[in-house]
Length: 399
Image (tube, rainbow, N blue to C red; front, side):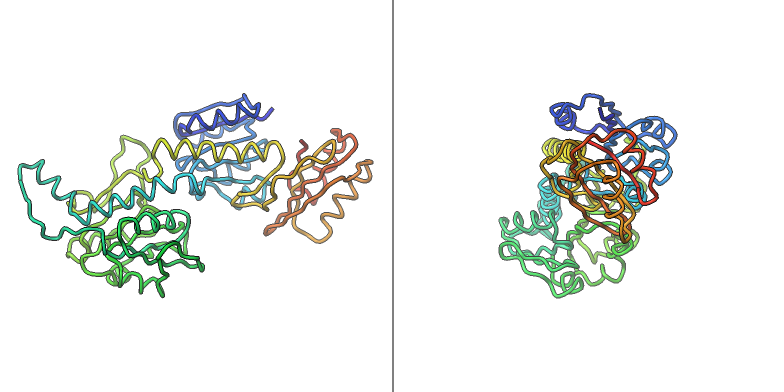
């Protein structure tokens, strides 16, 4: 029976999926744990479920040899050392689809609020002012929305924005088929020069670090609005602050930051605090009851399919094999070094122990290969020890 450990108050829908599949050895933690406690909590775990604040580095992954699979109950996976996980034969799953609607609604809501200058108007009413001026307040209809990153969330925003009467343009490093009347911009600079509202939906990493900097922000239209609900590292905060103070940008909304507080009682440190035309939210783009329930279900279902059948479809760091119906008495999951002759070596080892291969599927990625083999015959501990001890083997399990 798999031992499952869940961190950071993952939605109960995940537990329901596990229990429905017969997995009841589940331990839950309401928050992320510091490294020393995390090591103890993971001891003996076969499955780890985390969100964005739990970091699984090389030391933690290497120090828990029983760990078979990791589920990130969120979109991002940069809190996991993906390369080390792959080298240890541990697939990592996430939830790339479940919170798209929640993020899209937040972004469009912020766009409407900033175009109408609602944050400033609201603050002034609380201070005793009754400012009914229409200066600087605009409808969304007819405005141009520029989406940087036309993935799952970008597509959802595109569809909803057109319903508000916005003209939608987008930029992506990959060719993407537009939905509705959206059109690709010729380049990032082309998008920035046209858009009244720019919203960012790109992954983190070196390639996107500070893509919105002093130079690119200067290319935005005077009076435009910048929204970031992707990764905190993609915007140069000091450059954004300067553009807001100078009046080049009319407003901004940020849900993510380069450095975020580690707990609910720790304040955010940012030069943007106190600016009346800036909306700051505590990384809540996907924090709705609906999205968290969907995420819990989506990731748990992927983990269950892996535990029951070895399915890795949707893994972010691993050769992807789809669900395969069992075809033999026993299923062997073998992760090996991606080298010539690896599959032949595995098959010869099985043949030496009298195992007849009924079905076999192989996929490789980078330095590893992953093969699911259904066999007839008894796969005892001696067979498994032989397979595990061979130099070509990274990891080997039986179902």
